Image (tube, rainbow, N blue to C red; front, side, top):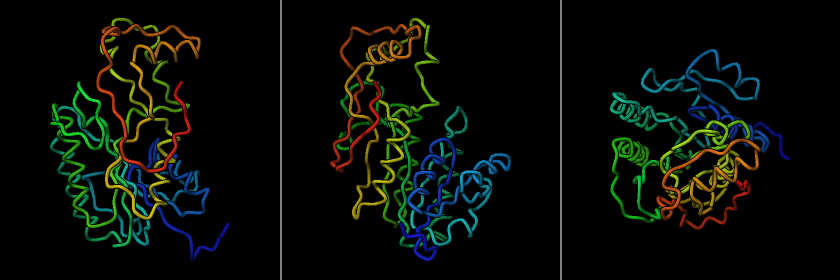
Length: 269
């Protein structure tokens, strides 16, 4: 492995939280220099421990540091959308400001990967893929799409990943659902992706010469939530959650129709 600092590529991560930190550690294994932002000074020390150069940054609070954007080969924007009631417009305004900032300071040859959400798709119907035609049916979905379009205005090589529900070794939703009853939506598809598959998908997109502009990040499984969480609870030896509508046909299945040559490694059952 080449360890020359002069040839090392540089990754910047805006929003170096649960997913961003995992991405950083993966890229560091391949000798990338990684810079990451957090909103609070208290959490920046954790980035240093992982070998990440920390920067304080919060959407809407200040401009990005020039030292952060300098010499970037890849920028990952992984900011959880602030879409609580009353904050939707503020989030969009902050994303517009970020885009204007990046237009000024981001190197022209820097690739951009933006993590969005499969929450853009309607709450029922489908199956949905990157090729589907549909109308956003909630305010949250409309704002998620608006944020995607803002990032899409950047003149850089870029990809938006619509991530399904993220799970991982320390984020297992079955445990929080265990023992609950009368949960609605048992026939909805379990659209999920493991943290490590999301990390490897981001790495994969950074390595291909002509990445797609849009891809759904979702493990290829066709199973209702009622069945998935029941089976997962059996695996974990915990009381299963009880869902309603479990006997109805599967609804809101999300797939990827973009052929990448990428293989998902982390089976969810």
